[in-house]
Image (cartoon, rainbow, N blue to C red; front, side):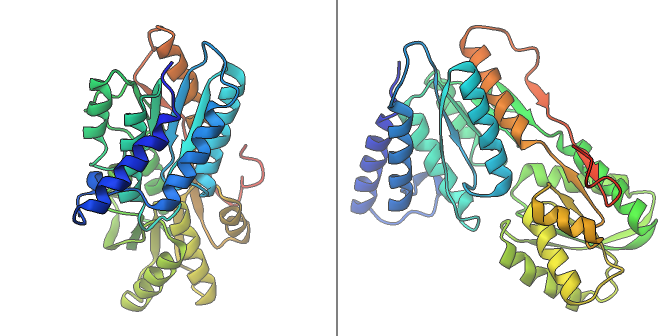
Length: 334
């Protein structure tokens, strides 16, 4: 069986090469930071200890380790490992502001370590070429949360972004009415998934007199989201609604709404972090589309094992579904 422990050696070599050369701007060429190397070393040690013959060693490259949404995905992975005898190490960046660059380093290192399979978020345009690289080495690649449909990934496990985005449009109409001015807070326009959600939102409101007045990027960072939200309120005093495509975006918008007393401003967002649910209970956030990251992690491991066992997957797309949560069902939607 391929040994994931080799991941540490690959990262060390990468840093040595980078120290001798000039600084590169292209994400795939960037060397992982020392903190990333230490994290991967610890994860590799855990994955290698107690390995049983016949179990599969997998790597999940987490976009932002420590973010509540991805922690739920990790819980699903752990449950699947316990049930199916797989061993999945979880590695990835912790800083939302730099994850788009750092996550590429982790994927490159994961490929070089030649595990039995790799799972990761595929919402960046820099990821598909790495999927093809893994495929060329015979390493199956599973897309989690965000798809790369035109790549050789074996399957996608996550939310149907169009359906989710359309649902946010319907929720905005229900809460705000058929006319108004709406801004968008997103983690980044480079996220294909989020832009699909925004496009679906626009289609849902197409027959209404609702204008999209601005779109701001936050890097899924709460502090940045607060600053961007405050600027939107100052620039567009007649703004009547805000669509937030990441969990921290809607929390940032809610914080500003409460602090500035914007009681009539409608907020629609995503994901059921506990703080978000509390805002819904108070009526600050009008509605959220809840995804199921736990099932993304669990089903990702389950399907990867089936594939490695030689089974034919029923489909290459596995929709984990969504639920619209409002003040009416916030305490009983699960």
